[in-house]
Length: 82
Image (cartoon, rainbow, N blue to C red; front, side, top):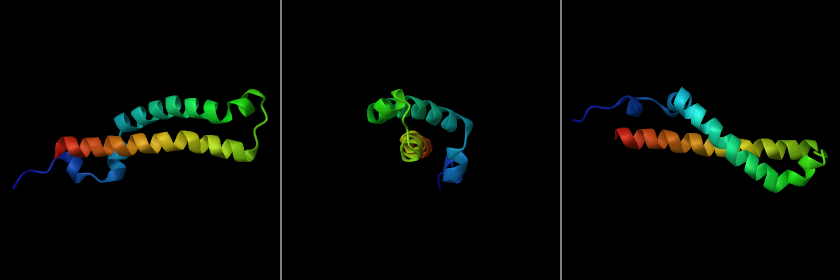
């Protein structure tokens, strides 16, 4: 029977909250989120006419790439150790 690695024994949250995964996800979120926010809301950002709904949407624009990056990093760590 093969030995289980550390990544196999850890659940999603411990891997997702590891320093390397969080740091990488933040970088991805800042780059991708900024590009998407400027594409989707650039006119309102530049004219400083954001509504609460726009701010909520921009927050989601940053949150989605963070979540995708975190999920893919955890899956890559699990695949690497399998």
